[in-house]
Image 1: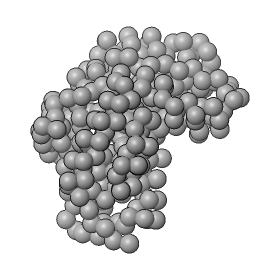
Image 2: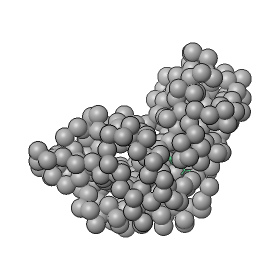
Image 3: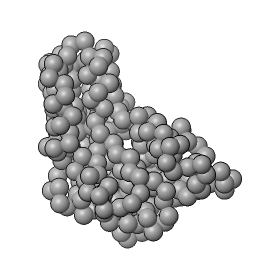
Length: 258
Ligand code: DGL
């Protein structure tokens, strides 16, 4: 099946580019449009109603650009709004949720750490997933302040290290052997997190699983791009410098009010 329209992605800011990278690695022949709603970050502290309204605004912009499928590259928006988005818009959505399944299947200590936003940890969808693993102890931690620091470009800062120490030490003490990164911003913290965690603890994020699911849905329902002219457009409504930096200056970033 052929469909030359772009894949659309959105996040509360620059974090979803971790998902974009995984999709681009697996599907290098697909055009993409990415929306960084950095002006409204963090979503993690907002109410469900606010997250649904912001998600609808982002989706409408991507639909105006003829996207063929939309990746909600944000755990907080997925766990709070994907049901509403699927009901309202006639386009396939791929969501991202904390990867607790692979961690639960492989954990030997039966103790798993989850670092995510308050919005994700409190959501009904996430708690429904957790309830499937009665034999596992989950050590949940809200990553207060982490998204703001990442959005400000302060990834490798003493402040970041202090916050990570505070959030991860209790998980280490609880004997976790898997740490699930339940926010698409957090993969950018993996080098800092690795300095804190003992070597036996595995870190899991959802990027590759989302990319595989995107490939599957394109194959089943939507169609792949065959046009030779590819494009990757990145829109932000605040702080283009940080988005450019996270993309290593390889792509143009367009500042737009949305
Ligand atoms: N990157 C988002 C997530 O995956 C949201 C972070 C936020 O805006 O609080 O949850």
